Amino acid sequence: MSSKWDKASQELIDLLEMVLSPYNHTKRKMFGSPSYFINNNMFAGVHEDVIFLRLSETAREELLLEDSNTEHFDPLEGRPMREYMVITEEIYRNVNQLEKWISKSIKFVSSMPPKQPKKKKT
Image (tube, rainbow, N blue to C red; front, side, top):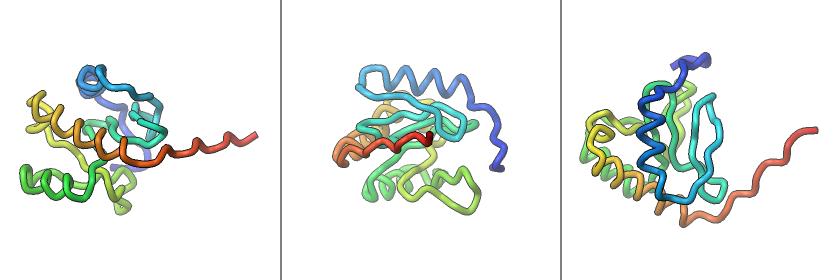
């Protein structure tokens, strides 16, 4: 991935929004693409042609055991986001599997203290 990112996949945006619709969350742009937050903590998003989720260490290890093709989310090449994993197509094409991992992400992020929003520069 380069610093000039491709537009996010509309198919993945639609899929993620459908699966997230029952949950109370907010949506903002990160990396020029939609990302989803609970208590101002990002838990999911679409970047170019991938879905990424924020997961606990235990869930990340479980995901790697379940799908060895998954990897850390690394939008800036060489600077992976520690708690974020890319969900492979094999997982997101199975809505039950995608819902399982989103549920784990939401549970993890919901356990975090609310993040104070950054003050806008004037």
